[in-house]
Length: 307
Ligand code: NAI
Image (cartoon, rainbow, N blue to C red; front, top):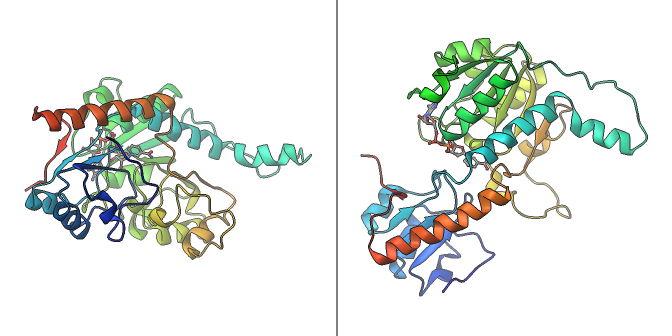
């Protein structure tokens, strides 16, 4: 039997899982040691993530408590890669401004100047399933694509795209796309030092996870023009904001509010995955995985703590 709850999983809502064998959670649910301990004490045995990223789950605590954690490793990397390109094009050609202007009877072109992607250098950080597609799509735009990833992906090199050190990627790229997972090693990968090392006026795009970016450092970069434009589908503190209609509320996150004041900042609320195909694949894979666990079959989507 499936039972759906609107509430986000956290210490105060874990009790809702009483009587369940598994809980099925998403990107902004909290599955830290405390919450996993509560779930285990209620008899829950499995935690199924309806997403690829798993930075919100304490895998070591899960292992200690005997909880199995599974995810959907790849539901539609195209969905996220295509949204990344949508953000790049919309931000570069100021489509979000033009849309509102034309509807308002304002046909001025002031402030709408973009740049050709052809001939520009695009830096891709993380060339796994999603990043490799972003790289290939930008390659089709005739950008020069440079990549950074500790593990090289042959689908990238076979098109002639090159891997470089991160310092070279920061220094050379006109546009940078973050497509790596959030781990202790990638937390605030875009720091104040990284921003200073970037090409002045760079376009920064983050569809990975919010905390890949030190938002305050990026705001400082936007103020000085070191960062020319910014597109985000994820935000460090998004758990307190995203996936709800808050249009009637006062925005209390001053950092997020500051981001909204810049003319060349485009933010979507974690919708990179949101295509019909991806949603169907997420549901099918999650149900199949839970079926495997229930039947005691080997489960390729199980996550284990790295020792
Ligand atoms: P993946 O596991 O296929 O690829 C991740 C790549 O990042 C791997 O090649 C890995 O070697 C690389 N990597 C690890 N540490 C790195 C570092 N320090 N610097 C550069 N690269 C590094 O994952 P996939 O499917 O491509 O997803 C990437 C991330 O995108 C996910 O972890 C998730 O956080 C995010 N995502 C966002 C979605 C959205 O709706 N905005 C939806 C799905 C995923």
